Length: 331
Image (cartoon, rainbow, N blue to C red):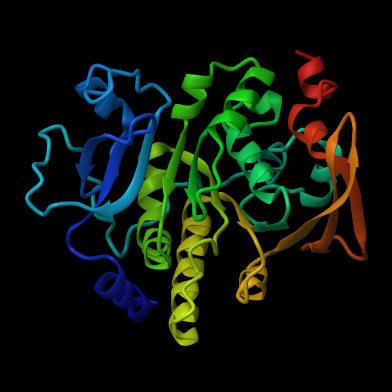
């Protein structure tokens, strides 16, 4: 893996590439840092207001990898992520009950029946229409307390295809009676724009990110969204994908993460990513319904314990906004 990692640093992540924090409203740059930093410190340094447009920054800050001038001044409050030693050992408890993982759910029996258990021993890959919305629901639900089917945790959301939807997230917060601004701050949304950025972030930065934000859930949405450069040699793409997979597995094993990866529009590399999955579910259009909106068919293609074909149909509106949730009705 070291060879792949060295290649990415040399070819895909130049020395002037930084984490750029910007206002989601006007696009104005708020801060540029070599390492990820908690949003609280950045918001406090700006009194919570964008200096360019004057809008409130709560829940409206984008973070992405990009090039920045090498002489950009680093703020004194920059929080650097300490380097991990090669011999560093996981900080997870020595003994954890398997049942503690199984409580995390989407609170939707028709899909939970296919995906469970949502835990570190089950890397889930979702492909097809609606996969990113399902992953965003999982990232949101991670912050709910365990008695409501969550993990009481932040989440890291790596966006490989510019598919994250803040309006959907705000709607989920209203459904669960959670303050939308606070909910947004509990998900670290990191967008990437090239395959090199994605591979570098996943192979080198994921463990540090989840440590810094205390996350138990990692979502990689539209993982192949940037793998659309026709002139890229197949051997290079395979090397980048190997590095990305190795980084995901390292983070899952060292930090006991729940990992969900989604595939967007079909690409020639879908089968490679599908091969990473312990659980593989394909979502495909079924029909339209006046009440439930688009109805999808969820087909279980692979599972570590279930055998035989298993399918379910449901409306996306019912999945995302169903009012008859047994967990919420019991509140």
